[in-house]
Length: 256
Image 1 (cartoon, rainbow, N blue to C red):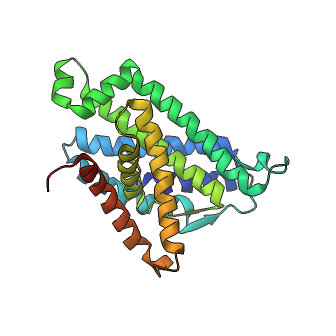
Image 2: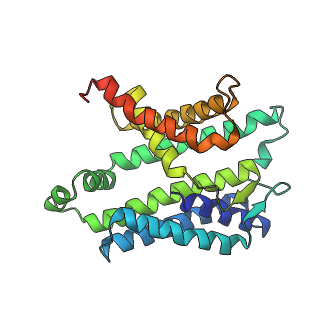
């Protein structure tokens, strides 16, 4: 995630500056993210490298790849036409356009992912993640599912990077730092708030968890009572993720 996110932003920014349509640039960025996921899967499946280590190796390599793609640490998109540009100037205030646009895309992404995971291919992928040995016993090609799962997940992460670059007006090589922590916090917070009530509710919980996480970060850093500064972002992040990890145990009354 930490590598595919800035990869999506970098590919999108460079293509838009080169004159490529913003929507097409986002699709190409998703393809680049899928390729990065396939590399991680290849290291894990083909060369038997531990999945966590394979992810770390790919992430380290992508830092240099992103620099190569952009040619410099960051690229500005201030005056470029993006996916959001056609929606400005239609009577809606500019500061409402970005969240509404991203919100619609998030809803569509949740529906697509939900429908896919409810399909036969999605069930096979979920079975592989839950218990690969049992999935193989049922005739599931777990290697193929790992490749597919890594490609889809990293394509979605790259899409997030593409949207980040277009909504914020820049792509930066460090924009993906801590992305995996945000994802973990979103999943845990969403599960804590909504519980395990089905796949669709779990996906919605992830979305709400990410929103709540960002709001909590902003409130903590902007609170004069606490006295925190922007430089304390990593500390606040660590505290919030720790709280998110502890909450399910407290809610479930698990013994210490």
